[in-house]
Length: 342
Image (cartoon, rainbow, N blue to C red; front, side):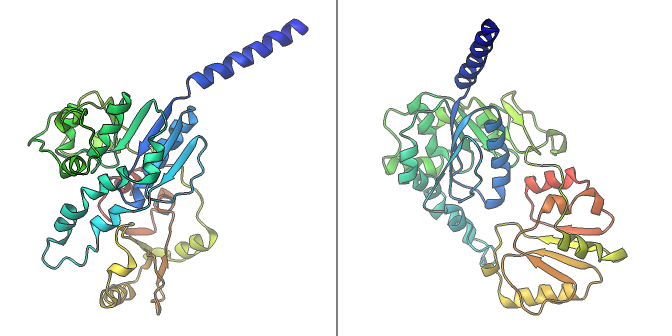
């Protein structure tokens, strides 16, 4: 009996030791992206956590996810909001273009020089995950630490990014302004090679897309890993009040209107909101509107909320009552739409 207990204890110790040895430590950099992109990044964090990896997640959003083995580093500025600006304040069609020139480079060099980021870089890591958009200056990190890096695409691959994965594409890559500004601000160490060399050295790339749903289908190298839908969970029951309100739409059904996280209440003038409500009030359907601000004198058929469980609302069980889904054009929402047969 004593012998068996000793064997059991040694076996437990061996398994515990092996588990520690396999627990890789990663740095996950999301310096740019909208809040809605977080659902995709969260799914990757949860997957890595489940297999024992310890991740330091750098983000401009205070997520409060509390995921096991994940430490969040909050950046002091959110450059995405500055870069996107107000989509409706674009009378000449060029304001967003100018924003990209002004804030695009800073959305990389700003986080790279952030005190919280610099503190995180003092640690040792086994690999780095880098959100692809406007993040070229972070390529110094895996080079200096001599560790592999992985691109994370929260949307489909678009030119010129596909060439960085070794895939065939049209057009050519030119040095980005994030790289040039990093050199100007001495954030690009002199021993680090040219940007052209580093761009094409990822271990692989994680893509939030489904190959069969892309059009036109393009050739991709084996280093491109499609994980579209990784953030989609099993539909959950709706809050009772919301479920009753949607059920009450009857045969006329309801329209789900969501402008995502980019368009905010302060972006729309009152005259625009009044026009939208006038149209909504004239419809027979009920209107479920995701909106982050209170609106007075709502038509009786309109319900607003700052947060709505989108995937649960799109569930096939409500398909007969959902007559129209108005949304922004992002691949993560397409994945949810297809998963729900909408």
